[in-house]
Length: 533
Image 1 (cartoon, rainbow, N blue to C red):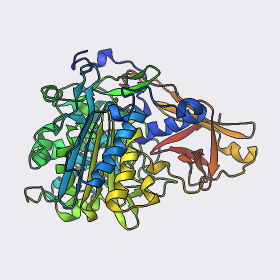
Image 2 (image 1 turned 180 degrees about the horizontal axis):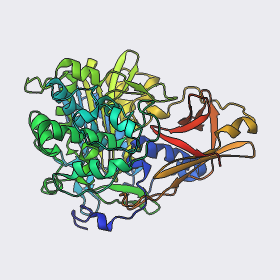
Image 3 (image 1 turned 135 degrees about the vertical axis):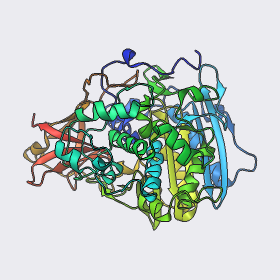
């Protein structure tokens, strides 16, 4: 199999089935995994049929002078790679002005090409924070205003809800509170106008799921619109503007949005776990129109160069101030809260947490076949980047890394298990099921749906059961391999009308102002109730 076998896939060859919700956010696929494991405990407990017979078989490049705490994190990663079938990974940690890096496994299971320090991985949705950083730079330069309506810069902005089109602000976009369906994974070509075309041709088709600003719901399309604002404010295409305003000043010379540049060097193929074990996943690249939401490829060293910008509150590694202090601090300030989630909130493109006075900024990246995680504790001078080349196992590996690292470097205790986007939103400190009679469960029953996914809650034999369904959307890009959707998973109701599978929080009932059930918050997505059947 050649390294080009999983390159760009033209829209004419893409199935019209929906994009798996896991692409929207790493956490969503983890919730589905929790439910699948609940359905088949034996299978869920079994080790993945992966590329490694055990942890000792995983090649690793760990410096001889690695610190004990870095070795502890690397050991946790190696064990998780073996457990979850992760082919390759790269790890970087910065603390107290010192950086340590290591690489593990292979970039390509067919050729056994090893992961090296130069191997490019997909940063995925970590890219959203790059887009947000450039937006804040343009705000500081007076070219954009955080609280201004988007129509001040895009007078022809068209959305399904005309009143939303007139009122939506840059802040709504950066906090995922715009309210329209965000899984706009459409191919609008490889030209410089790809983002403009997605905004012009596809955004008007996206249904409004809830009122503007009501609560957050992860929204890729809103971040794409931010990318279009960057183009309008700079007069450049998105890639050129990002290069000039962020990548070049940070000396991120290898990082790129361009697939041709990716394939000129070492890069990681994408994989997924299936009934046949760990297998290649495709397509490898997102269409260019999605660049602002998840198109960046990078290395651990260059991701930490970016992380240093935020840890230093806007000062680049060479001492140049790229962002005023107020912009980076505002990005990490809580702006919006998910219904029923207490330990993670939305900042401006960052997700933010605080434990024991330690303030964290974090973002995951989840693509068709890769998973990444970036975590910052700016007040402690700490940053961590993990890059992996499997979309299911990578999400399984990162809790081990984040838990171990925050204990070793930040001194966290039990709360370390809540750190990050992967497990944080699933943490339920009070997961004891409420003893509800069938008539008390009945108001929750119904069908909750967006254009590309549906969740049905029903009551049977006194138990609330949850099923998922993939819905077809014309032209929507999806991964070649999609696992089965959970069916009739027993779900308990815990305090605050939250829903749990075992001890894991998966969502919450969201009520309208008139107290009727209006939505289901499913991890960091929100689905409107479309029927009571």
